[in-house]
Length: 318
Image (cartoon, rainbow, N blue to C red):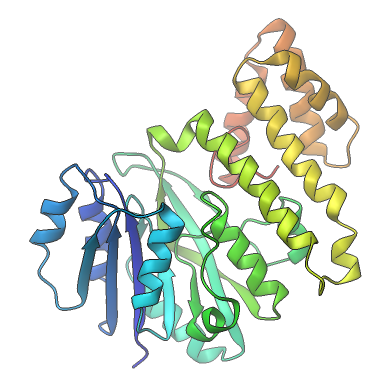
């Protein structure tokens, strides 16, 4: 059988990590290596890790350089032919691993896969679905490609070719990895169906995380557009790619109530090509003066209809 390695980076997520571990170890696929790489948690995480008795399960707790470093530590220990990581507050849904293995067996030319993700609250209640879509490199570079990290899998041969995650990135290291996969010539497939759950809670909506995301995104784009092997049709997307970052800053300033910074950015998107940005930019500009609930109402409707959050969330492209 194909050995599958799952890595979980962990730090002070004791409220959720037992459920994450159980979601992996209860999979119906037996040939599994599960590694939890903990960054020296000071909450109940260590007692939970020590309580797990399963020959497939290994954990390490020591100071690390953040999530990307922890993932890479796990991948260096990985023995599997198929690889993935799941965060310590997220879940693999039943049958996710066996379904992934079957797909790779049936599609030997595929390098990596991703699917759809159930969105859950801190208490586990479902509130929506984040749907993927067939991978399109141009869309991914301009913020329009929903590539879900939770429940994604890739072959060891991919890692052998492109290396580990970029430890300079702390928020977009997964998207950076998918872009590197595609730009290196591997096939990245969307496999419809729920395969994992992303948990929304407190820190996942903080302004500091949004700011870090945007800074990482700009760094990631600089890497892409400095590649000497970049095809000409991809290189010409540079301006549109960086516009996505500006759109993120417009929303971030607006959310912070920094309207002097937000308004000039919002005005430039009111005449852009994307109807959704025009609509939301107009609503946000109106609300910056009149303080109506229009923007938040549109955000609520958009999230319920698409699973994609306008103002915050894992998939910010609109």
